[in-house]
Image (cartoon, rainbow, N blue to C red):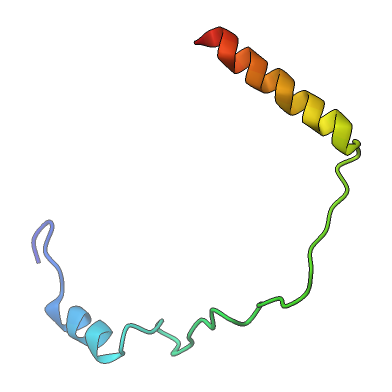
Length: 64
């Protein structure tokens, strides 16, 4: 084989495997689904966050 060539038999084997990994394993996209709720604590009050957002908006308006 020359530089840049490939083995066509290898290509045929991959197509015959149905696109699965060489060991025949597959990936289950729903294996780690979570039906619960997620929550977090921001560490700041809502008023503080709204104030920070307003400051960011004011800075953005000054830049225009």
